[in-house]
Amino acid sequence: MAGQRGEYKKSAKRREEILDAAFVVFSRSGYNAATMSEIAREVGMSQPGLLHHYGSKLELLQAVFERRDQMALDILSGRRDIEFLRGLVEISRRNHAKRHVLRLYTALAGEASNPDHPARGYFEQRFELVIGETEKAFADCAELGYLKEGVDPHLAALTSVGLTEGMQLLWLTGYEEIDMGEVARTHIQQYLSVDL
Image (cartoon, rainbow, N blue to C red; front, side, top):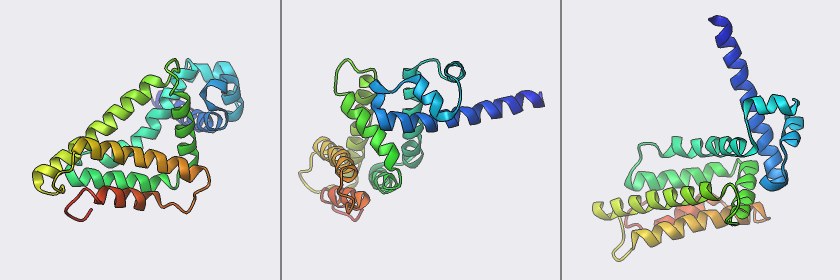
């Protein structure tokens, strides 16, 4: 039994190494141009060895996205109303230290604007979830009296998500003076009647 646990540990570690390599290759090449053999070379293993852990490029991409999203889920878990909005600001602050992850995400989001792209469904679901949860947080703030009079929670959610997505792209393309967390905080604050 102990041997099996040791093998599982090694396999889990290897899967993490593969995800690290996939981040690098997808960031550098984009999803369409990246190959499983390129990822295998990056991690220092054979392509059949890579396929043992991840059966396809799409499966590997999904695992990369799941890993990226887990950080945000950890921050937002159990938060509601204004605390949820504070969590969004915290995510923007933490993204500052994750340039390679943002580059991958932004490149693939652009590729996925093509309706035939394999990641299209992921981005559609992700935006629907993020906008929906942000709208719910603004609506909860309205019920608590934290939202300014006349603010539409749906529009506030759309502009907040759009702003953070756009700020990431600007930051990646040379506007490194942008403090993404502070920009997100300032934007969301304009809708609130209490301090964020």
